[in-house]
Image 1 (cartoon, helix red, strand yellow):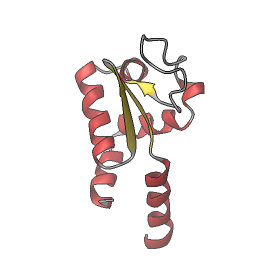
Image 2: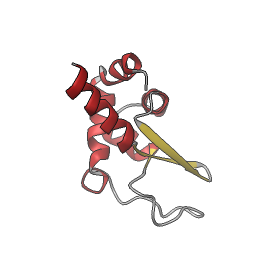
Image 3: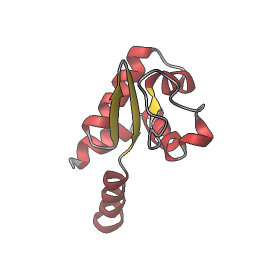
Amino acid sequence: MDMTETFKALSNPTRLQILMWLKDPEANFPEQGGHPGVPDDLRGGVCVGSIRDKAGVSQSTASQYLDVLQRCGLLLSERHGKWTYFRRNEEAIAELARFVGDEL
């Protein structure tokens, strides 16, 4: 994990908020799935459209924010047909927490 890139990703308030919302997706987003070919169990994944709506940003901005978070390893994605669902990468977040606790 590149900590510099991770901290850059977290320096944007909306990207940080997305990670916070995804900590408890059931409380922060409408029920997910329901599209043809999408499994009922999305393991906490939230579609881009739901994240975009909650963040109040355009589709392209939401996609860019999610891409930044995914490239630094904080998000995982799963594609089902034309829908992409994002969830937190808890292992990477734990690694970040260890780094902050041990190194800073």
